[in-house]
Image (cartoon, rainbow, N blue to C red; front, side, top):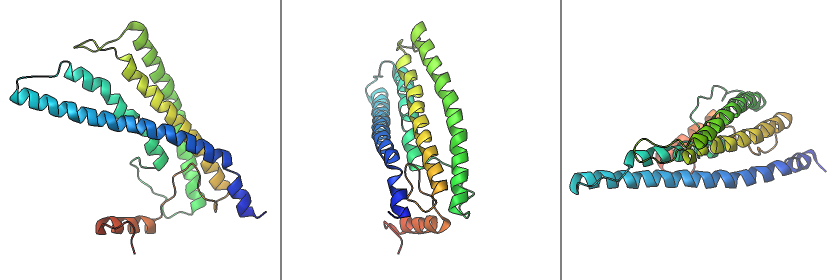
Length: 205
């Protein structure tokens, strides 16, 4: 068996874990997208109703507040998987091995911070549930919305854990195909993608 075949066989469990978590991330991202659509629909209905029919949606502000965590947090792990969070990459000209190490360091820092946020947001959710916290206007219970935060952050923590495993693998086998991690983009690839997007083509020729 060749070294390449051995490398490809190593991350089988990582591929399965990445695939399983991807389904969950995509489901949560779909819910976030539906929440955005809901807010757009409700916002238009509110403006049109107040402008032309002297009608306002009962508890409009409360509903908006309760729906906000859905689109604000549920897509965060999905974006992390794709590497689409806004950032500044100062290592694009570095060797791939060095860039993987930097990515690993960033993921380690992130997973520690997210772990603290999961604990803090979960205790905040439990407190809201125990005291019966509700919105100001129509007294909607706030705990369902607050439960979305630790849920989304927990999925993000799992994604970061998989990425840490993926980064460690890439450091050990720099020539292997990336699994459970965003692909590194070189300056040349970024320029080609920008040219293709400007020309309206799928890829630059």
